[in-house]
Length: 216
Image: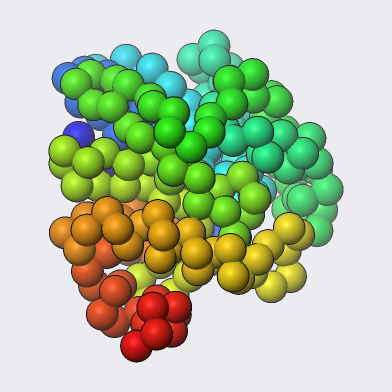
């Protein structure tokens, strides 16, 4: 699985185009401007990709800026966890709270849960429910290539925010990390919602929040 990363919008939120054998998925359309949307479209066209699925790790406003654009371009809705629905329905309220504007995405009609899978090319992504930063947080895991797109759960040297946001839980977040992500293995590459890619091994040994959670 090839992962093409982008970083967009004032929140510096990552967007990922994952592709294999001419087919692709777009995870977290964080593009805030037309130019940012076009940047993703140019890569899709450059590789001649058939975009099979639009996916969300969670529906916080900084991850959904470009959703409506891609829904209209590809005639499909984003797939997300069922707990994302209230956040999408309140997208305007989220935007107002952060002093930004957003064109609200459509409410998902395909809901993803723990153990579901998403396929494209020769790739099958496994869904892990990884709440804490947000109740709808899910991670997309590809075990054969040892890669996962995890949204705002685990960052290089940090973890997802659990203060000042609705429906967060630090305990739940740390449980998601220790019970769902760390068991993937130290060689797993982690593509986070913000910041650079990292690995499970690096965060297990160097991330102070993970060290605290595992009692080291």
